Image (cartoon, rainbow, N blue to C red; front, side, top):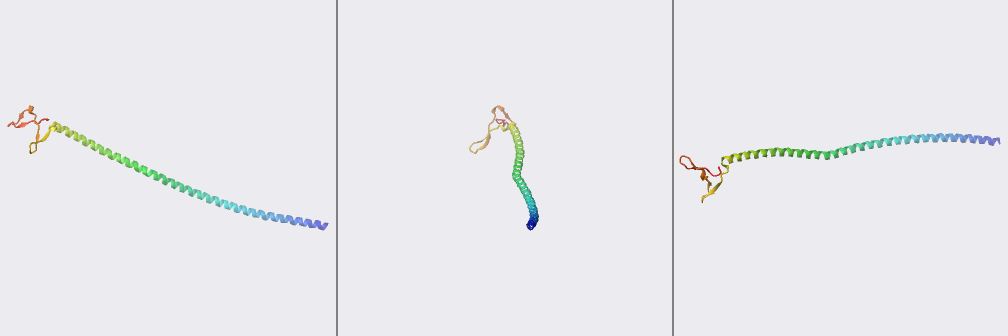
Length: 150
């Protein structure tokens, strides 16, 4: 039995050695696998972060372009509207001044005979005017008369 005991002990020692050797091999394989996984995860995280940054820059550029597409026409419309208002203000001011000048001219003409009514008389359609008979006769040869409306 001693031989059996020795064989059993030897088997047990070889089994322990094999178990330790297998454990070391498995631990080494797990460490290599863990290292490879960590490296792959780190690389994946880096690619994901780069992709997110690139997408953010792209979205920022798109947002800026869309704001520019809206802002530029609005500013242009406001500038055109303001320009039109200023131009119309100058035009209207000029027209008001011209109307005032015409009104002054009309008042002067009215004071100087602008109320005289002229017509065409006779077969030859000559220019004629009404005479104010109550105003009297003037001139050395008494041929001048005051026109009606003056």
